[in-house]
Length: 421
Image (cartoon, rainbow, N blue to C red; front, side):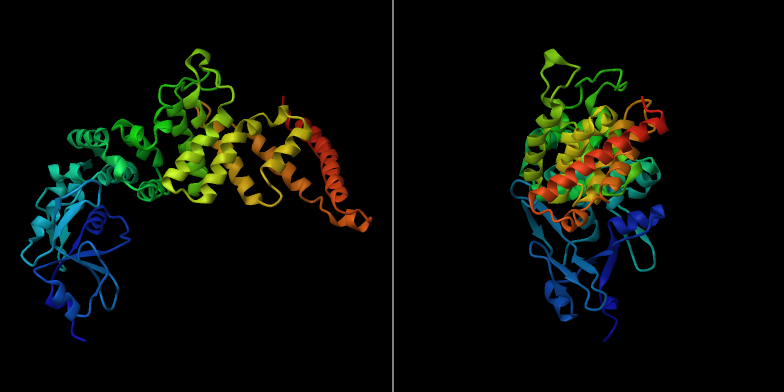
């Protein structure tokens, strides 16, 4: 087969060019083809995969090649566009429809950069800036810019004031509500997997997108906590600090999502009893159910978030709890069948404890205690009781009583050895 690409006027575009210039690893190579038609692409052996606009897979390497196109707003939401992918659409016109200048560059096969909107300058100055006023036509771009702000936070990128103004205008317009829950979650989960997801949520808060998409989380900002345990005071600030701690402890998005959700119930606390938050744990449970239903959040993320929300104070007060209460906690957390989830739960509780101003380096000995207690009690199984002739509920009761006795002894020894007050 002849060299297919030699017959095409094609360019590497978007994130691949941006990351090449930044010196980052390029994950996906996307190409735009100028001056070709659908028929010509099919004749060359490309397989068409795009329904709303012509996107093709290379017959050999399966990389994506899209015809240069323009878009015109024709409805609401991020899918409400009419697409023109005729052969006379120029590369400059194609790049004009993109979200940010740093994503509106192209590179030819020789490595020459085509940069009509000064993306390289913004890359050098670490600025996230919209390409044109057409930015406001696509509500998804609010989430994308927030995600880029998080992803490139360590490089020193900030959002241009005029771009943040457009993001705020979009957020206030109600257009964000046209986004599907799945699409919002996709952007959120991608940010949760990066190194600075707290920036993603902070940007959404700053441009009022969080107020539209996740009002219960938005409402945490300005809600005070007792200064003794929360020198940072603000519940929203605390939640972002907890998320940062979770990032330092684990790469799991389940743990990071649960950390964001753990104090949602504080958004419902009546003003007259602030800064106390009695019952905020159970108050947060329906809020988590609602947002998980809205965003189509995976079950594993939801289940861990619910457990952390309901029981994180039990973990913090582990040494104050009676052994019978600790055993009941273990049963409620289903630690015997889900030991890995229990470990994730403890990671979240540690993130909550250390996610406070001045608490960042404090030891969270409760985690060590609860984990060791579980490991000791997990060794007590049904086998010896079956061998004694016990059956049914009698076996369950015998296991429970044996575990309770073992837990009392273990707690006494642990407290004594670790000088726990």
